[in-house]
Length: 254
Image (cartoon, rainbow, N blue to C red; front, side, top):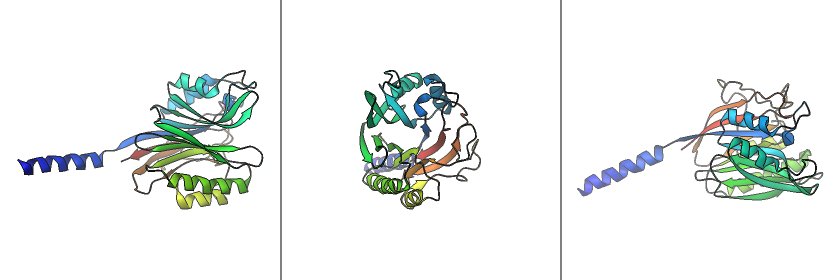
């Protein structure tokens, strides 16, 4: 009987270790929901997100109750349309409210916190949310190369402190061969063109949205235990809703 119990426990342990979960990850600079046609529409931004069926979404360029956005909390409006949980990270005070980045998630975060990042023209942020099996982070880096490199070092250091696999997505404002991205590639898995050649649109280009020809938005992970496997990585077609098109990855987590 004792031997039987041991075998059952061992089998249960093996099964639990081999379980896998696939999640959809998106990064989308939504430009405050102002499209290339100058129309502000939270509904069509939400439709792009829901059509992708992503589980977690990193969003950039969000107003929260500013005069410019007529007192609207942009992230909450999009979250309401998507039926997802909003997590906001304010980078600056702006026009009576805040301006920054955010995360949408189907699962309510356990916790979240913000790390300030340098930018000589406008403070930036790293927003970190904890979920049951992983951390998910959103960021939007500086337009200045030196600030981006400093931010890359801060990001790598902060993610290395986490006790679960970490996924980060955002507008990094840098080409793949720039110093900041090369530094991140030494410390993180930076998903790129060719990683999933059979995806619907394996191009990594996201800017400008109507004719993407620049790679500045990324999805990356830090995973020392190799629990994350890339399944698919592609740019989603969204030519007018924002000035960026969103990038999507499907990740398998053990």
